Length: 404
Ligand code: DI6
Ligand code: FE
Image: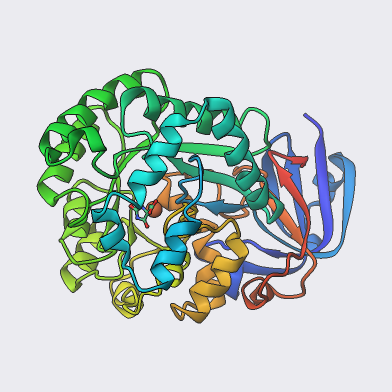
């Protein structure tokens, strides 16, 4: 298979054991074979024989090259919007209060059930294109606005189908346990039984890569979450959890006990929770968009996460209620300004650690043998990606070895 050389660039490999911050390689080079990286390093060290084998060459014009960005937590498929609720909240009505009054997630569920697959697909594609324009090459998409078999199926099918006509890799997560649908009001255990009936069917249809739940006082209890995770385990599916977003319910410890890929949000995470996550190798997915949009004041405990060595990812949480955001670059900035991540931690959070949060070992860093998903940026230094607000210095995205 023919080889392609990319040169005249600075690499930020994001390799975990790199000697330089960001895995920086000045005057670097990449050799791509098909959809895979064959060689990564300083141009001066590229073996002459390998260089001679390259039948095509791309001059990157001095660009910075990072791995393709990974948005590891989104709710991209839904209908309608919640601008009216935004106005209500600005007048002082709380997010949980709106949810208890039947608004919030339930209003998006009504709109999503009423929408056709084609309508859902076109609104999700619009949001997806925003993400792709900033160098996203892998996106996780959760269900959770259908809350009934046919509608959860419809949303997961839409999520899967987005990868067929966009150059992006999609991971689909079943979030049937997101909220209680109106027909099960007051019967959350009965709804959970229903979720447990949906899961094996959707899994058998090839629509589920992982299982998630919203473990919160306005959603599902730790005991209910445990029942769901038992079912996921029986099917061999990995789990992740919306945990300790609005209160500390011990969800992180519970999820860690099931070897969760990630626990997400975590504003109220305890020391025990962080320690359990570290032992289980669960990634902490930080969602500064939701923190900002809900005007939260309780910060996720970054020092605790660092102390225990929990890897931190950063994501948009793109959803209509708490983070109507389709800019992962903006999240890089907010992770630094709001959560005090370093720009290097933030960039690792949308590359290496985001891949880990999805259980994907073949991407997230620039290294031989991994996928040739990478981005050329018109910046001198990777910190500039987190520093700017509202800029998009993207030059070009390469997905599976091909210019996108
Ligand atoms: N936590 C969130 O922030 C989103 N879902 C969740 O479990 C909010 C979803 C929404 O309000 O529509
Ligand atoms: Fe979420």
